[in-house]
Length: 370
Ligand code: NPG
Image (tube, rainbow, N blue to C red):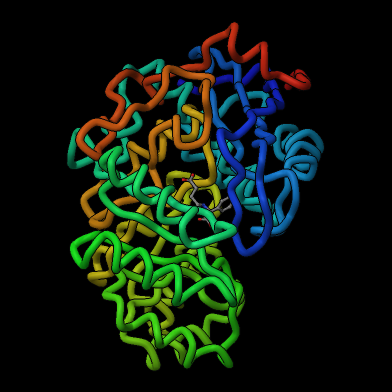
């Protein structure tokens, strides 16, 4: 039986962050989030669009996602209904790019489908465990003492690994300071968000002394060949994030030797089904993967935690507790226990927005009938 979609609500919310989050591409103080709610003949489904307010991490941004959903993606859904969420990706394929917007629409339909069949995201995707070890991403700070205080706080909360954001001028020294203070056993990795070029290879090779798990996206998003060259010059494993927008990209990166680890962000690759394909491909090639984060509310976090429970996710992800970013989340918060988060077991995402909190942070709503 087909699932008929009667309409889609696009709801924008403003979520203040507990502290500014600085990366090599900008500073976030508040998260401008687009939520998607589909209403279907099987019930409703929720999803979160990961696009940020400005196109700095990638070309997508919230106003753009709203526009493409409203004008092209939602109107493309057949009024006769879809067989399953898996059909949504194929229906949206004629539109190029816009992976985050597409991912949100497909995920909302998947949530509706799973809520109605009573299956959880984790079970549907193939989760192999009921809880996942969690890492935390630590932004660029004004000083080393400030960084050490922040890391100290996360280590005492029980995070299983620390990721330091780096950029030219903030790389070797912060890594050295964290290693000296917290010792060699701390699982530590760095993320450059494309801030370097191949000319910086010698500087990046200095990080080899610190036993890092990986260096993430050192070079530009479209520099696959240069990442392969850099990987030969470093002992630290190269992990790609921004460069991998599809399973085809992952296949190219693996065969080029551009990376030996992949950060899978479902939104960046167009959804959880493509994310699972990348997981399967990487696993078949012995390439470890881990689940990235984009400052998600509990809606996006729930699905990410489910994905992170798949067997090839052998490194801790950026699946932090809700309180890493938000004083009040729009769902029941995800709370770290012994460095882990439980994989939700309820139907679909296994969580939903709390109406009063959601209303309090809503800045706009729009209903698009099919
Ligand atoms: O824990 O949700 C999280 C954020 C982890 O560092 C993180 N995300 O480049 O991976 C990244 C970075 C990011 C943040 C990317 C915001 C895009 C937007």
